[in-house]
Image 1 (cartoon, helix red, strand yellow):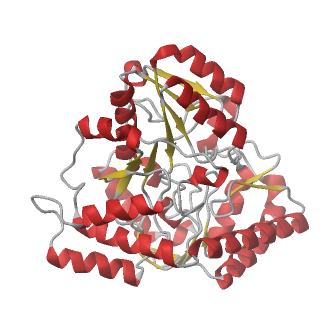
Image 2 (image 1 turned 120 degrees about the vertical axis):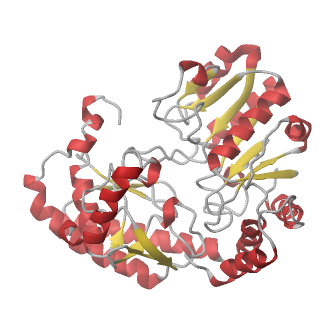
Image 3 (image 1 turned 180 degrees about the vertical axis):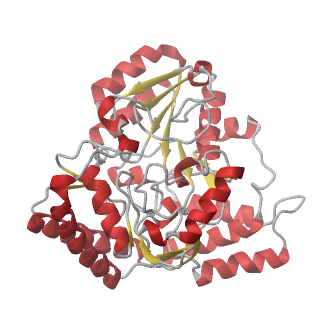
Length: 426
């Protein structure tokens, strides 16, 4: 396929001259199969088109922001209407109040809301609020959990100092004893415990939260006066219409939101309870574009759809059908495919594939058949997908498994993923 990527190759060459590394962050295809396009032209519903005109069913949903479909008519109409009235103004519009009210009404633990642009903004605000509230320094977070790209939490340390990540203790997700040991180590300096809604680390199997672990995190925060933070930037609104840990009966003090809350328009949020209200009012956080009105208009329409439609039940049903169908086809082809995480945010990994050579081959074969999957990052389902789309994905998978079976005996290691088996860093 890469021979046909003429426009994509041209843009990559131009980007290499003016963008460090050619592309950066999670949108870079540097750790994806070589035939994956880097640049896209448009999206509609559940589909995207690359710059060379090829159409894909998109199981990445822009890494999460697409919840109700690319170019959703109602959401985008609300956005465009507000653009005609004003977007970035000298002060916020009334929409910021309406949106905060809508979030407080939707999310069980929330008594207030603050808005920003990126998930990293929201998680950093949560950490700052917790430290302001407790007047303590230490944050506990799970090893391998992703909470953004600021120096305090970025997974790649280039350009940062050890001091940027000081006053942090890591524990093992879902390991109560490890969590308790971390709290004991923090002593009377514990500001907060950060929790992912489920274990969604890259390159490894996902795991649902153990209710005992979640309840213990809540109890330890209550006992020490620390704040419990659930980072729902990635999973918010795909697992529940409330904070994700509401499914297991645990409410945090703070929660962070982003990606899909405005269906892809730039907006993130920090929500909190009354315990943390005074501290949140004392921290200084701001941004030139944090108060833009058009994304807030889009978010209000997104939250209306969250409240008033069966979107969640539909994507769960589609996810269950995809999981069952993939399992059947993998078994028929003689492969053991591990499917982990919530069905609305699936991850596929092959047994006996430590360097992901099988996963890379399978992903390339799916791409060749018009379905954009990911070989090592969790994927996302959206409400624009249909049963026919799932059948398209399953038909593509049947062909991809057959192609993988033919190629498996001669597959070579993937050089760009050598760090998975050599212990290096990416």
